[in-house]
Length: 326
Image 1 (cartoon, helix red, strand yellow):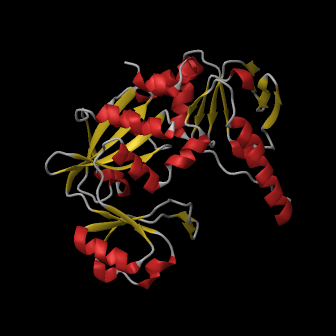
Image 2 (cartoon, helix red, strand yellow):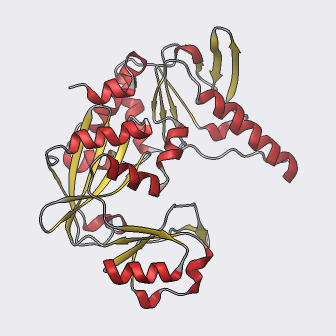
Image 3 (cartoon, helix red, strand yellow):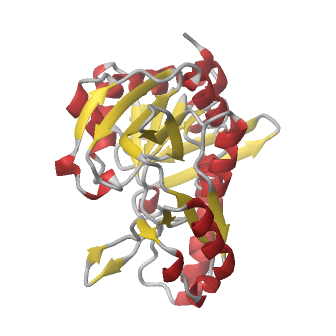
């Protein structure tokens, strides 16, 4: 089946959020081509031509063929990595690079396509120092933050701004004995800083004296704010202790959020804020690929519908037009 005006959904097989969005689009009669870029080239094929008329061609799965010139939107979620079993290490490195720059380059160059989000822009926005600097530029309050590899600078920062948290600058995939693991946010004192800090870059941030957290999910022009009460330093460590309530953002917050996304040319963002004891919202980070569907189940907010609206409208509007529409 050839799908014109399709929505491309790029993600792994196990993605409940994508499942809900795809089901909503199917119910609306919107053609969807879902695939995992990690399936290339086994069950995913691309044939793209670039001429004076631009990029055209097809992308094929076992059940769908998408016309690349007519893709209305691309929802880039959480695809798996390329694999080339059976090749030697040198051949694998070559094949991986060719797949990344070949298939990846085609998917990043679709004409008149709305990206949610563009994979290159996701990469830009995942640098935490860039996100914090952008937040300051658009007027969002940010806790004092230090990025350093100097132990003395870390100790001095902690003494001046304590209490201070250590936060990882990235979340690389890691496992121990077959179980996934990550580096947790933790309190840190000046006495705990030793020379191992000089081994790489570290992020230290003043701890907000918070009473609650807020997850703000922006989809085009739609803004969904959910207060999360937990009593935890990091609410993501124990979902069973969370309670949720829908709240309105402070005055000027919507405009600042859209300005932040425009800075990175994003159509979607999952923002985290801490609410301090004076009721002020303090920016912590924005994840350009953050999870959000569980919040609909907890609050009843029409988030799946909003994402489907964005993807369905797709190429008829630019991300900036979608963000500033009423």
